Length: 346
Ligand code: SAM
Ligand code: DTB
Ligand code: SF4
Image (tube, rainbow, N blue to C red):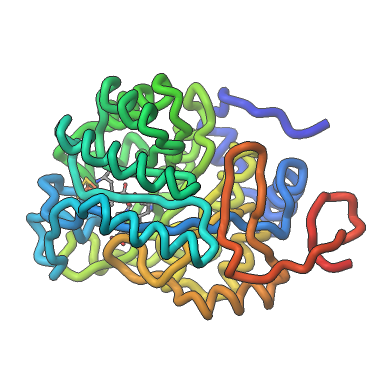
């Protein structure tokens, strides 16, 4: 029987998973992964910053906060045509999901109207859409849903008890409220956090416990490794041990078996071997393309080569939701013969 979808994880349950011997943890995580997913398929999405910098919030990790001198040039919301041109280019490169990020604390209603217009146009290209715009109220979430938005990304970022050391301009409860509005509007949820901000292992457990005990597991769970940016308060934080990062992916996979776990920010700073461990531990989604929002991502050629070396292929079709790039690798059609439904060569 497949591992059950649970929403009653205790902190002790989650801490016990983190404390397992590394090989034991990876074995368990990979076993759960295979119950719900093709172990050789990775979802690939494109990310674009549609409104950059100048943000009034004080998120200590973020290069887009106006109060930190990070060299990020503030740019107003892109026009519909400019976003559509980028989305079309992404589609031509094989993308089927397009994620749009805006450096807002919370959009004004007129911003939401403009983004809704953008969403309608991007959707019209036949792309799946995802947006991350900050806090939303119920009406704003409904407007975006009506425009055809598929996913909304809004992260918890860290454990409730560590949150106050990272962000002071909005509360943890504000984030939970936005997630509720997003769910109630019928949007799919993309929600995760950041590790490597100086949190303890216990606090990493707290983040994952909170995510897994939401009323519904987020369809996508981005696990970001802090990208340290000069000028932000977290620049210079002691880096997380790469194996602790892999543990975080593995525990996320065990707690939320059916979700897509995204190996999100931080891949450019990560060794290929560590990425390979993350894929084994249950990560099955990445951002593809040279840039995240304002910071770097591995270049396309590097990712193509990595997929080839690891015999990974882009996820073509998942349930009714998930997406992909076709250009990253011409996947070999065929069956691996293991009955797992994957298309790796036999
Ligand atoms: N402004 C909106 C908000 O904060 O909800 C949306 C954009 S914001 C940049 C999206 C997410 O990016 C943040 O919640 C955070 O998890 C992630 N992020 C931002 N800066 C990061 C960094 N330096 N390293 C890793 N993740 C980061
Ligand atoms: C998420 O969890 N990670 C992405 C996406 N959601 C929007 C953003 C990462 C941003 C990294 C810092 C930057 O490039 O500005
Ligand atoms: Fe603003 Fe979002 Fe960056 Fe926080 S994470 S400073 S809200 S852009």
